Image 1 (cartoon, helix red, strand yellow):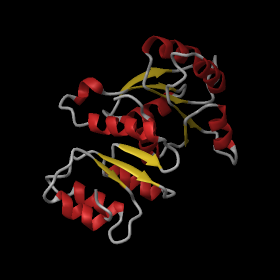
Image 2 (cartoon, rainbow, N blue to C red):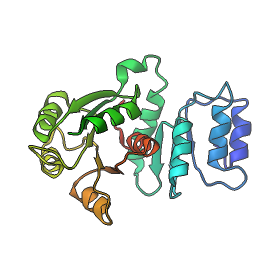
Image 3 (cartoon, rainbow, N blue to C red):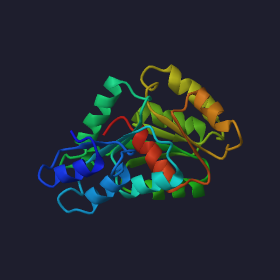
Image 4 (cartoon, rainbow, N blue to C red):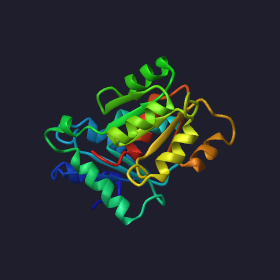
Length: 223
C-alpha cells in the first residue's frame, strides 16, 4: 500500500508487485505521472495496472491511459466489492504467459464495410474479432459464438440495434454480455437514450480510437 504517487514510485524500485490499483488524483505526484514512470522503467513497464478514479476523464486523459496500456478502468462509485475483485482477477489474468489463447471474443455488428474496417483496425490484435453486417446475422452470431463483448451499430438492416438489445438482454445466456453502442446517433440526449435501452457503453462516430479502446477495457468481462 502507498498513500501517494512518490511513495508508490519509491516502493516499486525495490518491490515489484504482480498488479497495481492506481488512483489518478493524488497530492504530490499524480497517477498519470506514476503510470508514465512505470511504463518508462524496464522492471515495471509490464506490470498490469487497474485505474480506480473519481476524475471526469477528458479525451486527452483517455488517450494518455490508452497509450500507457492500462488493463482496467473503473470509476469510483460505479463498482461494488464483488465487481472490483472481479476486475482485479481479470487484471492479474493478463500476466499469464499465453495470452493469445485467452483473447476475448468481440462481435462487431456493423453494416457499413468502411466502419467495420476502421473498428477492426482500432482493435488490432487486442481481441479476437467476429463480424456481422446486419441485425439478423448478428443475432445468429451471438447465439452461436457467445462473444465476450458486442460492438453494436444502432442503425442496422433486418433488425435494428434497439430490437437486438431487447432480445439479448431478455435471454438468460446473453443478458450479461457487455454491449457498447458504436453509433452515429450523437445528438443531445442520444447517449442517455441508448444507455437506457440497455447498452453498457456508448461511443459516437466517427470513432476516436482511444475512446473505444478505453470503453472496451472498462467493460470487458472475460479474458
